[in-house]
Length: 478
Ligand code: HEC
Image 1: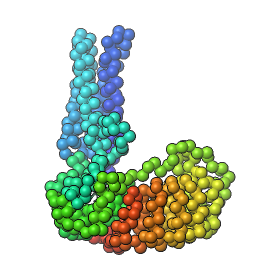
Image 2 (image 1 turned 180 degrees about the vertical axis):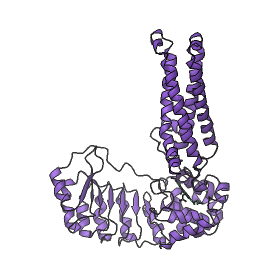
Image 3 (image 1 turned 45 degrees about the vertical axis):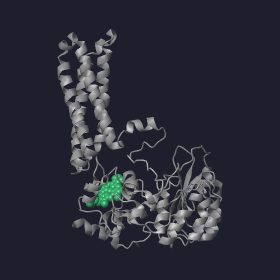
Image 4 (image 1 turned 30 degrees about the vertical axis):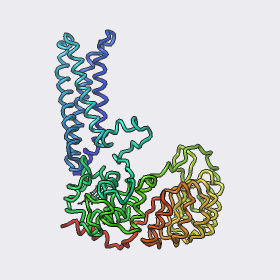
């Protein structure tokens, strides 16, 4: 089992070997047009042989990967048959080409033979690329320069003109799933045996049965999973993938609770004011909200390296200072092991104000007074001050951090009134409010006040008792 999964995982790396080697063989074949390269002709069968072996190895690892069961569907089949054909064509080409005399007499046949092989390699590679990078990934960057050509086939979210007139499934829920779920639960991959790209498959469920109980969000596997804490192994989407926004979660809950309707418009299904206010973020002009991914969180402009002596003296106090990336001067500071009260230690960081972009004081004894010092670290893009002693007054000092993109206030005694001030932080994209006292009604209000911020409240409604994970596991058995 372990060997099989290792072999399968090697496939995406191994496929580059036959591509490179067979391309070389084809190139050599065409170089034979020129007399002075002809002395290299004997190399062609040898290189083709190595290429054919590599192609066979790619087929073996590919078939192993398919056997894991996570890859299915037409796109996989066509890539598979193209791959097997490539291995076959390369092998035949080798066998025939080895009998050199024939080819010396009919050089054109050799050339066309190599061209067929090259075409097969190219098609296989292209279809394989579609599988890992999403359909048409090759052209994405060409057609719309600057669009994301990252691993996920996440579709762009098309905003709606008027939420009330939008159809709940095709215009809203399905779009969210296309963007955040279908890369793993779609036509080419079905993790957990689940497809979320069309209603029929979705309603059938995954390998553990139904994932939606219309009318009952909190009994639906989909909703339970998106509400689990990100670090829970059953949380969806997996922790390292683009996450749902709070708006997305509220949308899915409302949709399931109201019967998981596939055809009707929001106005026909019925919606209360506070939910409607949240879903307004999917409207044109408002959008971006649900889908915001942070701007680069490491500034692009170069910065002078900080004085090593200063860093050393701070490290001696137990503050962990690390480069964000060895190639630039930017730094992170982490107070996990800090030995003195944070408020006074923070003052030591002031000489690093140019370099410090990430600061973590989670669970420390930071107070509102310390926030005044933090406010002088103007370049911070990410600030974790969760589970500290700060209050709304501390938040007020932070309003000058105009580069700040991510702020974690989980477990802090902050109120909606205090949080609303954050609207002046124009760069802010992500706000974590786990275990704060912000209630559901207040949350809707806050989302309206901070339209461009992705607010994460984890369980904005369900308290996360340890038993939640158990419930998920229980339903899996049926
Ligand atoms: C990066 C890949 C990935 C993404 C993206 C992803 N999932 Fe999953 N999902 C998995 C894997 C792997 C499993 C199977 C392992 C497990 O049960 O946790 C799974 C299982 C599930 C199951 C359980 C199916 C069953 O019957 O056991 C549900 C429900 C689910 N995912 C919902 C979602 C939703 C909703 C989204 C989008 C918001 C999503 N997933 C996004 C990888 C992913």
